[in-house]
Image (cartoon, rainbow over all chains, first blue to last red; front, side, top):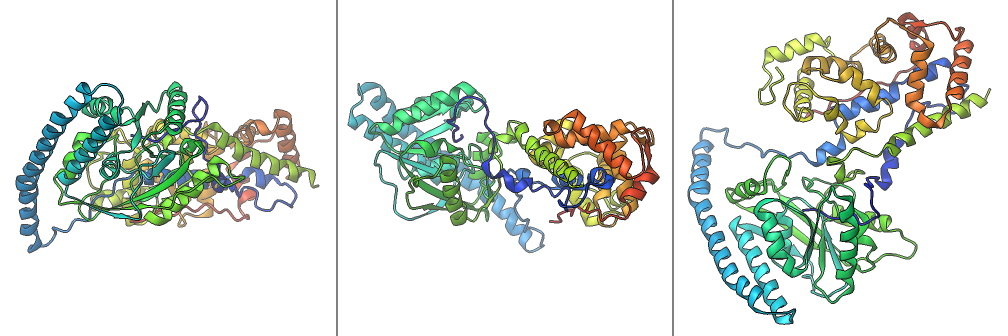
Length: 370
Length: 175
């Protein structure tokens, strides 16, 4: 699942506040005459490179943190073993049964409504939305989700876009059980894809493929159409990719240029029982759900923050940053100036060029000062 | 070594420490090992160019392509040896030797005008013309008492950079 990028075609992975990372201290004393040693001394650039090899803020965003082991003690170890037996032997089968029962109820109600009630009447929409909320509650129950919602519940007014930080596809489930948002998602293969096309489409959700430049325009158009009509609110994860809930990556600006109210939602998971981060490169969603269903509980806090509007004179990128600030402060996340899509693409050569420009200008300036 | 799932034994750590002239503490080596395994996504026991470039902060570095020629296919021991130039325990002399090696990619033992020119090209890209670069280099070389045709040996680098303050320390995060 992902947020969106609605700008024109082409892969635009240029974080706006990347300047923080460009303070090249090459040529530290800019007002002295240029000497051979200034040109030969490439240590600042080398240090930057080595620093990035040793540790970098981007990789940290996608690192799953293993839980603290606590079964080290002779007394605790049997307890831990007992826990494993309870979690896998009792809780897990119970949860699978709950989920299965939920799906049976869901489909036996959804399919008749979906195929028998013709046309786009309000009743049909309402029933379908309620059913989606229901199945999401079943999902949350299947991992004993302990979710605390703070702030006023979302209203189902049109002309609203909800934006949230993104940790796993379960973010969507947790938010959806309170209100049937229309969601913007990455197309997924397998059973998730099947659900996307059959069920979620009925609540107005929009699909796209992150790597298809063409899809961006289509999504941008669909978004606009959705917000202009009298529809349910949109839910967008503007990071565009799952982050480990300790950091936030750049927000894509698409959600912020629709001209409607942006309602920030901050989600913070408590890692006490299980790390809710879905590392989609390492784990399928089924395995991710399995991990959640064999844990004691998924504990999380959800804050609905005050709706924000574009201020006069503010660009959509600044607006996105402002909302990102709010969410990261509320959920206690650290911000990094990187675009989450760098997981899939190389950074733009513009950033390198910017560094080269700084260096070249300082060389030329100092050369003139004889 | 190089097997992603394996842990380092005390012997391994000491061997690596030996190899990098004790530039890193044992804890730092363990941290570096975790980092190495993280970068080595394919689990092949070495980090490929592509895997290095997946770190955006590295990929945007103007010298990344040049450094990749030194980094490509290093195993963990060599990886640590490479990074040892950035340890605070490494002497100024060794740091200058490292810089020299970055210039002298083909290991001739001396750095010619063209080598310096190509590093300067990496650093300035399209923001200086080739003529400007040559002019600047010739100018500073002559100021320092060399000519365009002289090639610099390691001892020249020592003389030029030896009394400047090189800040080339990278701290290894220990968790």
